[in-house]
Length: 184
Image (cartoon, rainbow, N blue to C red; front, side, top):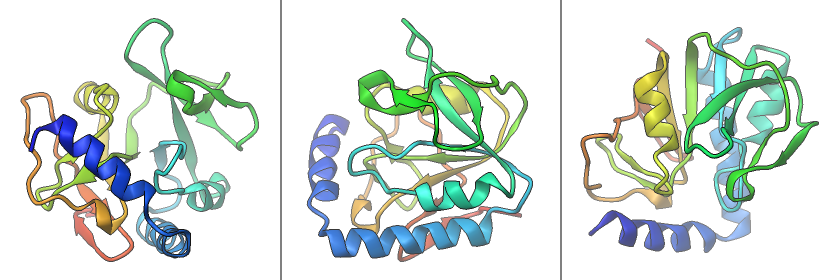
C-alpha cells in the first residue's frame, strides 16, 4: 500500500476509535510515558491535535519534573524550531491549525526524548506521518537521544514503505505494548 493510501486509511481508523477506548488508552499511554521517561530530561513533545493520542496528562505531569519543549513551524519554511514551554498558556493555532507556542525560549541544545505522533507504525519502528517530513527532517538534523512514537495499538500496520529520508524510531508506545528501547 502506498503511503498516501496508508494515511487515508489510518486517519479514519484513528478517528473511529470509540471515546471510551480512546480515553482509557490515553491514560495508559501517559502512565507508560511517566514510568519510562526519567525526570530532568529535555522532552520534545508534540502538542495533541485532532484524533492524535492526547498526551496532555503526561505533559502537565512533566512540567514540574523536567523540560518540556514544543515544535513551532518556521514561517514560510517547512521546518520546525523548538521552543521551551512551562505551561499550556500562550499556545496558538499554527501550521494547519496545530497548536504551537506563540513565543518562548528557542531550544538549540540536544533533546533527550522526542515524542513523535503519526498515522501508523510497524514493528520495525517505522512510522508514517502526515506527509510534511517535519519530524524526519528534525530527527536527521538535531541531536536526539531517543525518538519515541506515540500511537494507539489500532494504528499498527503490517509493513510501512520506507524512503531514504525516513528515520526509524527508538521505541513505540501504545496502550498495549512498548517496542524498542526507551531508556538504556
